[in-house]
Length: 194
Image (tube, rainbow, N blue to C red; front, side, top):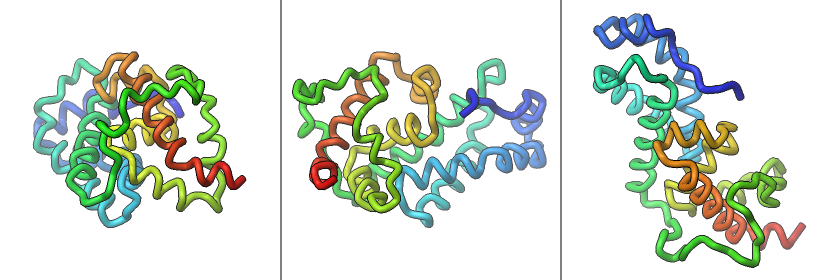
C-alpha cells in the first residue's frame, strides 16, 4: 500500500469553509477505506455502515479542528480508528481484558515485537479458517483489534501506525507484539490441528 495520502489542500480548505461539494469529494475518496476499517474492526456489515456514516458526520463537524499544514490522512485515520475503538468497546462483545493479559511478554513464544514473521500471520490467508480467525480477533480488546487491522489488513508500516494512532514507536511495537501473542494463544487449537 502506498504511503498515506489525503485530499488536495485546496479541497480541504474549501471543505473547511463549508463547501459541500468539496466535502463530498473527501467522502468519495475515503468512504471505501473507512468502511473497510470499520468492517475489519466489527465484522458486521450494518455496524460498519453505521460507523462509516458516524465517521464522516464527525469529520464534517470537526473539520475546522484539522490543521491543513499537517498531513490529512494520519489525522483522519486516527479519528476513524478512535471512533471504531469507542464503538467496539461499547458493543457487548466478549473480549479478553487487558489485565488478564499480563505484561504481554511471552518468553516461550520467542517473538520480538519488531518482527513481522509471526507464524499466526502465515495462516491468516486460508479461506477455510477465516471464521475461526475472525472469531478470535473479535475476542481481542479494541486497541489490539485496531492495531492488527491497521498493520496487517491496511498494510500500514510502523511509521504510519505511529502517526495514525498518535503513539511512539516503542508503544506501537509493544502493542502489536501483545496483540499477536494473544491472537496466537486464541488460535493455538487451530494451529495445532494443521
